[in-house]
Length: 447
Image 1 (tube, rainbow, N blue to C red):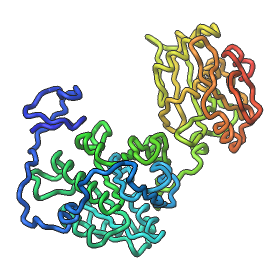
Image 2: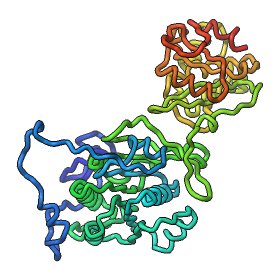
Image 3: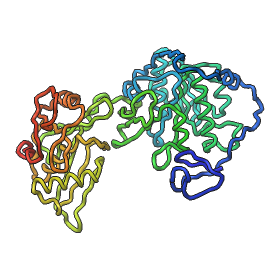
Image 4: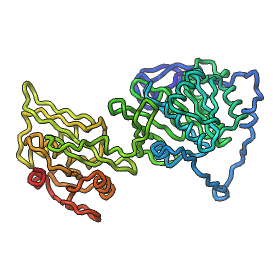
């Protein structure tokens, strides 16, 4: 059979384009699982799975047992999951090699053990001594943290059923193999079958599972998309800020929002939470030309970010438009609005816009800060100190209000920013702010 890496569809013959989702060069050959005989058929796991209620029930008669989430005391991690770990959940964590997936989960396991839980850490890629060295570096002193270096699926399941831990970490899902599947570890068939079985045992025993997954060249989790459909939560561990700061995002979460992010800093002693991201993304130096400060909203948290712009005469050829961390099409729109409404000729200038810290955002609330930084660089005059700009810029130059304005301003007040520029249509604002209607009113306020 041939399986699609993108959508998991199967077909009996190869094609250059997936017939289901239309992705090019995504079909991979794999043997189809038809149910081979296993030597030790009556295992503990098979008996456990067979004991299930097959009768349909009325949804009104089902009793809802509300169970408390398990807290890890790592606020950044708990926030991404949706305020804690749900019993029986299966989370898939992906990221580039060496980014800190194993380090983070070893620290999370240590925190859970300190809180009185028993954790089983299954490693198929490292030896006991390697993980022991890492635990010393991370200062992990918990006693009820069990380490099991094994890749055989049946052995792992028997250990889980015997030990009955409060949580299980599988590092990584690509290294686990099942005897009944006639393919190599990491193949599509192995990944699909192992993930399916881990999900079943997690739901049956109500044990949360954390599966570490490898990623492909384009950054997605290796294997077909069907693996992501099986699990409850998919987390991506990214390094966007000079490899020192790591961002964790949830692209799928059945128990919480997918808008939350967690920020960590990589130190010699492991990963440390960054509870105040605004201190990372802004620089309090006064008098810098071409810089303006805006506010970014990620899920339920707001933090400030510095927008930098450079406007210089084009030395040769056509002028350049470069945006780092900001949508280049949005930059082209804002430049057209500036040229038409402020009568400023930017055609013969190279324009570069960058978000400090390497952030990548699509929040429209940064429009006004981008416009202010471009004007500052063009005029070669710094923006007034301690000024925060919040507003979306329309095609006619009007300033539109942004969402959750009070939360953004509250974060700015913590950092000492007193001058706030908002749209005149902003309502129910708690703090005193300067309201403007059009970007024509921006120049005398900025400088």
